[in-house]
Image 1 (cartoon, rainbow, N blue to C red):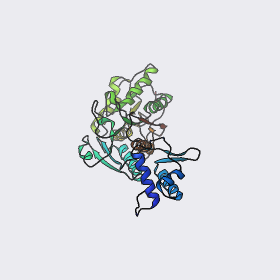
Image 2 (cartoon, rainbow, N blue to C red; image 1 turned 90 degrees about the vertical axis):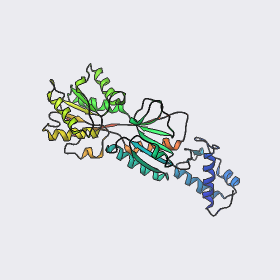
Image 3 (cartoon, rainbow, N blue to C red; image 1 turned 60 degrees about the horizontal axis):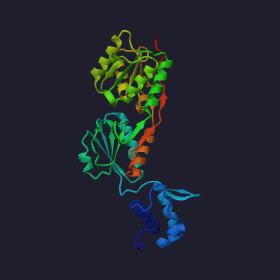
Length: 334
């Protein structure tokens, strides 16, 4: 090993990382023992021990007394991630960005955030990876950098998703137990983009019911007039829906606010549910019933995929869901 002013253990760390980076040791393989490393690198065993501990702390290896030091992730020169989303006003993305930024700093990486669909400006800054909203997926397109999508996309790609079928079943069973038989649905998306609507329809169909087309609303959370029109349509329906399932909390919050402005009693006249459990959802004047999944867990799974490096197979990482029942739902009046 070449001499240097750097600590001897750090030189061992650099050597092992270079070996992993060069493919001499792959993920899942076992490093040579401390005595072999010390002899081969002409350093003391305490230096090797300290290097092994440093690598374990970084998450590069995992030490198992009965096996040895196992390589747990690939080594990259840097981790500079671009986060691309159509609309940064959605509080969900702000919460996920915060968790991602915290974890990336622990791995000596960084996060650059951009609103919109153009990734060229971010890529030109020297990014190594992208995290993109599922709406930005282009079928048949080829990503220039390794990319993970937040949400389900209809193609071969790395994805981080919540367990939507389980989450929607939790919402549906909750409303069913409360006696809601007429359920409306609202979302900013349509078609195949909206997995939640498909799940809800399958659940309703199993009970020999479906949400009628006139109770399936497409509206943006920022469209106040659109939300008001949806509530007017619900009020004017005969029979009237007793529950409104929303694609996410952001949209549900917009409906709760607009209902209050229009004198529509929530949950007396209409129970409302969201999805993703924003922090603010528990603080509303009518706290929101919703499905929760951990942003911290989502960020951890994203980082795991990033650190794993290029692989021949794409991965779908699923984050578990749980129902949070609050005051925006109650038993159906009829």
